[in-house]
Length: 323
Image: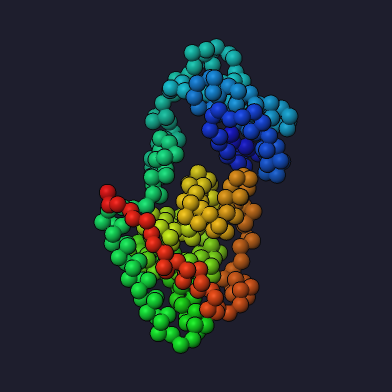
């Protein structure tokens, strides 16, 4: 279902079929909140699956005084309209279509966009990398942890160490963003150290407050490459960038990855709540704090800031077999 106002898309939502009666009732306040005046409904599959859902959507539109611009069912290369019964334009046997020859398909190809066949295919695009790449990343992570342990052991003042480590971590975040914006990619050692740094809330929030839609490529890369226990921050940042860009399915998959590893991870839970309630990312426009405001709110770094990272150092990652 696509919600529009003056031909501008205000929201897009999807459901698996069949769904229980009343599933769409929660959309009524969402339509009002987003200023939706028109909806377009498209259902995929045989009539016994799609028609009850389309009927419920049309009843909801009538109740909320929304115009239904179109309501379609698509199945096996043909589509039917629920609001047109003219044989001249909407024959009973359906209207054939070919997505591969449409203007949309051509423009998507030019922009490097590919329509994946199902959700599982999208999940695979952010699945953990295996094989030799995984083994190299595992070694780089072990080296980064050993280096951090040695530094912690040698320090005589944990607060001073924390101040220096946080400053280094913030620089590491900014440097990684610049590298990707210039078309580069972090090597294994850089990626591993950034994964450790993001375990610290202040470093992760630096990435959050500097967020752009284009940053999704960096966080997607890290979500695939980092060792299991260090994934939640990167996956949550990937979800944030995806949500901002309108890719809510990828955002949801990234959050599911984060919450499977750490069900209590607060950033992932916050973003999942936003997605489940169909909130628009525009609610954060001009509301994210600046790095300076983060510093003012959190105060100077101290040893306790390192606890989330230190608590991960002794954990073991599940073995990922090479492909």
